[in-house]
Amino acid sequence: MEEAAAVHTIAREARRSPISGLSAADLPRERLAQHGPEALRDHELLAIVLGTGCSGRNVVQLAHELLAAHAREDLVSMDVAQLARVRGIGAAKASGLVAAFELSRRALAKGMGSRPTVSCPADAMPFLADIREQRREFFVGLYLNARNQVIHKEVVSIGSLSASIVHPREVFLAAVQSAAASVVLAHNHPSGDVTPSQDDLDLTRRLVQAGELMGVEVLDHLIVGSHDFLSLKERGLL
Image (tube, rainbow, N blue to C red; front, side):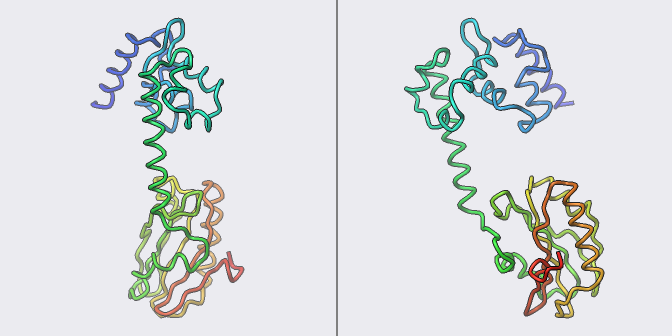
């Protein structure tokens, strides 16, 4: 009910705005409220930041023209004075754009700098220290972004002394929720023997196939013992 009320409020405000000549489906703020920012195109996101259009052009048209005239990498590096000279922008809109671009840069830089990268199996082991000594099998997913940085860790399932029940749905639900590009799978063998069982190999094959359908690459499957670990990828078993 609250979400629906918010959408109606945005629609009502939009009808009074400089983009009232557009259909409801084309109103960027309404599309944002209904579908989230991921569903919006670049010019729609830019239109929301701009807020209003100018004489003879609504804000969506202004955003289109701005993106057509300036490459994105150039646009985000322009200062207030440069943007303010663009027809239809002015000092107020230019300041808002520069502030938005700078905030995005800071957030991106902070996120990239603080996230560890997994470039080989050994890089994943600090994330798996807590399952080495477990007396039951823990199945874990390390979810990575496009730069192979760890963005999420999920204990997918906890099983018995000798087996864990894992369904692809649980593995890839976490991938979708974290917007992961790839995943490193891992589970422990309480016996300490890291030799993969046939069940381990069969499960890995199913998860690789499911990942291909989901667009999430399975980079490796690690088997962890109390003093050792094994990479199925390094053994040519992935």
